Amino acid sequence: MPDAKKHAAEIVRSLRDHGHQAYFAGGCVRDLLLSREPADYDVATDATPQQVMQIFPQTFAVGEQFGVVLVPESNGATGVPSTSSGQAPARQAERSAATVEVATFRSDVGYSDGRHPDEVRFTKDPREDVQRRDFTINGMMLDPATNEILDFVGGRADLKAGIIRAIGDPERRFAEDKLRMLRAVRFAARFDYQIDPATLAAIQKLAPQIHQVSCERVREELTKMLTEGRASRAFALLDTSGLLPEVLPEIAAMKGVEQSPEYHPEGDVFVHTLLLLEKLPPNCSKTLAWGALLHDVGKPPTFRVAPDRIRFDGHVEVGVKMAAEICHRLRFSNDETVQILALVVNHMRFADVLRMKQSTLKRFLRLPAFDEHLELHRLDCLSSHGQLDAYDYSREQLHSIPPEAIRPTPLITGRVLIEAGYDPGPRFKEVLAAVEDAQLEGRLASREAAMEYVRREFPL
Image (cartoon, rainbow, N blue to C red; front, side, top):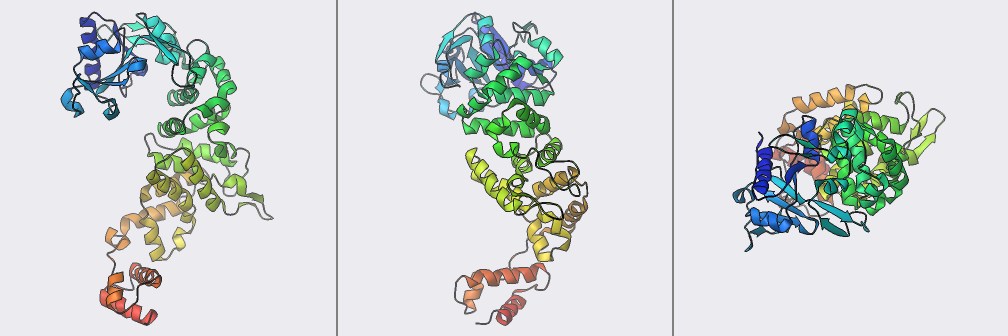
């Protein structure tokens, strides 16, 4: 038994030893029934948060008002000092596979903010607790000692049939937490299931209300869709559900934007993007995934039919600005934004790679996370014309040129120029760039040769 599962089972046993009901609950039960390893384990119990914290010496009361307590595997594993009451500071708690969420059976009353219940009522009945959960496949409980399944909502049948179905009234479930609409899409894509017609109809009706969800939560759901291995299906479902124009109108705008058959025989910009997403490997980096999604985001506003063919003049520059706005709106970190924008701004440069000077090529190859640029180009080609000449050449150059030749130690610096009598100023950048060009081209190999070049080309 994996350590996380063993820890969760021990929590269940301890709660029962103290006279309480306790079961595995939620997504871990679903995954176990699907023979998948759960990312984490949750326990549902009739013990109140105070009783849970009395039974376990170290806990994180991250949502005590909602009946949620985190129980780490051991005090030593958390590295967080306990308070006088034996409860660790909630702000320091970070969920890991070795930390189990223990939630008290409850029923929720009202969701005026579209996320949190206005009132929580604890209960002794697991049937009541299940009714507040999102989907039938996530609404089962399991006794780890006997493997008995408590299924009050038809979750096992929906797992077998491959259906994502809201528990009870779909509109009420989504009104309680609007993020559940995105989760329905993500689960359907991840497991390759269908969304129950009534559940889908409720999403289509309530899709405009997704704006009540924080941008950060929307970003995380979209990122999971992009990186769980079925990104194309997820975005097709976002379109069908009516959520796509709400969360990413710039992607929805790609639909129907035709492309030149010579370069894009696959169809319009949206079709091309879905084909590319289909090829994203599971667990790829989030920056590669978002770069893939946004690489052609500038095409719809730059579309024009020229005498010779369809053109998208300036789509890269426009796309970078649009991608920057999207990253800002979704609250990406600065580092993530920089890499996503780099993928967008550089994705067309591979067209010139066979004609690049050695200095330009080496600067290109040393872009941060160049493997992501290379992979995006490969996927872009395979999702359009299928020609991999530039990819193969770039990959061969990357592996054949020694790293020290791609990023050599500078032959001279600004200090050397000052010592040679040059006045500091904007010209230094031009001089140093010219010297590096010559170095990367193999025309300069020593400081002496570099200074001779400077004196000749940039005399005092």
